[in-house]
Length: 307
Ligand SMILES: C[S@@+](CC[C@H](N)C(=O)[O-])C[C@H]1O[C@@H](n2cnc3c(N)ncnc32)[C@H](O)[C@@H]1O
Image (cartoon, rainbow, N blue to C red; front, side, top):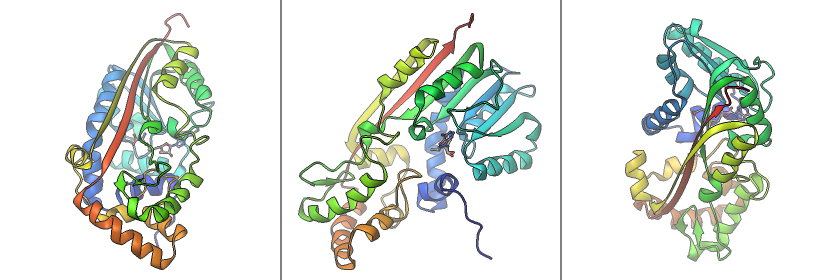
């Protein structure tokens, strides 16, 4: 029987992110474990507290928080994806943790199902990149937190690491495509059309905006850590634990809104062009001859005790 279809959020998080490769999924989760650790450390949780994880996805942060809030604590998973909420709810049941977990279908910028001043902690990881009204989201985080409650955020800063194609068309995803620049430009246009640089919520902010949003919406004790790297792909591969794979690159996409490379090539190129582009790109991918850029921000802030 055919697998029931999943929404794009669930499909990406559970399959397309890792090119459908279970071994790669394991490595991705190993890479994300310290990120989760940092988000939770910044949340400064104690036993018995209530945490709301906004855009909980498949529960990376939320399930990690269960240990920290202890037997008397509660973790609220919220997401716009019903499929991912059901996925996490099923996992919680299998783990015998249903009692300490709640599930809410809600967008980060409208948490009206969550009572004001009811949460000790709000966390969110890689979610604001999909939210158009980030100010409204911060206002909601502030509203639902108790006075003295903590907000802990992690976001990629994609303005820095967005796949770029300089006007000379020389680089595509960090690979040297000078000799096939006509094809690289065609494929890149597919990505740009889906997520236009000027307007896509993934590309319309940086770490300074996150800090300003926290400040403007009434948070205090704000601290932000920004990390940016530019390095040969081999350095990232070691850190992220992945091995270069053409097949996986073809089947994976950078985020739920982006096509896989295979889809973008199919849409942009004729069969002959696809062959020419692949003949050029594949050896570079397999040899890991790529320059990568990556930037992320961790933000921690506190709601005024008198608020
Ligand atoms: C990259 S995943 C991150 C999931 C999880 N936070 C993690 O750390 O693995 C992005 C998540 O944000 C959710 N999402 C997208 N837009 C959202 C919105 N407007 N409000 C709340 N969640 C949203 C998606 O459904 C998805 O679960």
